[in-house]
Length: 557
Ligand SMILES: [Zn+2]
View 1 (cartoon, protein in one colour):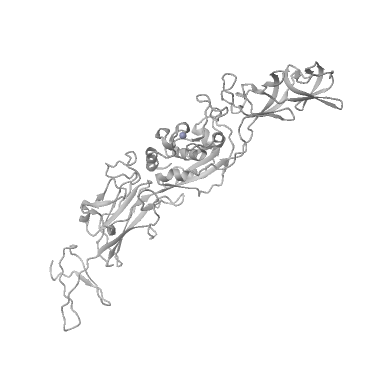
View 2: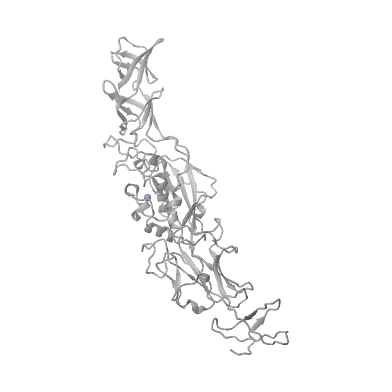
């Protein structure tokens, strides 16, 4: 360097005055300077050269405020949400990197920035983090420009970069005052501390940011089906048979499979040993609605109860009412009762659970009525609980289940239609069957890559052969606790009536079902195991690395 090159600028002002020397090689320059002082007796003074050094490198939000939320997952550091802050807003996936030098001077083209994909500290499972690979982030980012950046008069240099959108991706930025500094710099794999190193070891703390880890919001809309309606079968009893002391079989004028809407495909006593939909249900008989509970079961056109049906009868003759015990049979126009009738009741009225018939004759135990085919009205109901809707599904496990995937579950969406029409049973599991049950107010963003949105509805039961009515017998009758419209679809149905019949276990419950189904919306598969295993084979409630990898790599649920 020439002794006389004009390379210095002098900032006028109070002493000590600053002389900033540009254009010399960092660290190795020898600069001899003379200062012309106003003191005429001393024209030469020693000048101390201070090389500006980087004192900090920080992540800064685009609003100028430092990123400060702590990543609660493995490795610590900072968390950053690149999502769109509102459904129609642009993603907030830009972040600034700020380096500060001391002394704080304007230094043209002083600072070089590089960003590194540091190790994933949450796992060394090759499914989730192949430690032999140079990088392990699952999304793509746009690094800051490599050209050096000038500091301002406060000694601050900033660049902007675009982060990836995949949860669990992580970054550290390094700043240096020469491009050559980066010749041997890279992230260390595996490294739970997310270190960046060079040949000398760790990058000094003043030149590197904290780790920054991507998190995503998962916006969940919660709905419920409306209150249960029309969950019974009504018709007439046309024949009664049983023992001498109890009616155990009632023939109905309704086909309990094909006569229902939707048809009931549950296996029943007509062709199997399965007890049919009405196992453990109840029946109300006659105009008085006399109830018998805990039914044994049903066939196509009959209900059976080995313990007997409660069918009280009495005879009204003039102003006298005589109790005649229980009806134990009806065949043709003749009822059989348990009482011994000691008189003729021709012309009187037989009341069967309140339903009246004109008596045309009787014996000691049989009463014949005038109706050619006497019919006794009934209402038949299975063992469902009709009071459990509407209410929102239990989402209390979602936060726990999804935290290891760097997904924060939130429920702040607007939801003008929180109640959907009641559906007793679905015909099948096709998208076209299930999705019409949704009232998904936020469907517009269901496929957004920047505003993750899913739907969960409290429903009642799946198909009639999947509703645990009768009590599930594998291969014939099943129990669907929850379902999605389709893999990576829009939403999940949680079947409260089916779940009600299974007391919670350490691995199966309504809350775990919700997490499992939302896992399907991220393409989680039963073969993944863990929480995605089906309830009968589930042994733990955590997403496996396979499922976590799906969640962290998918563009949107
Ligand atoms: Zn499943």
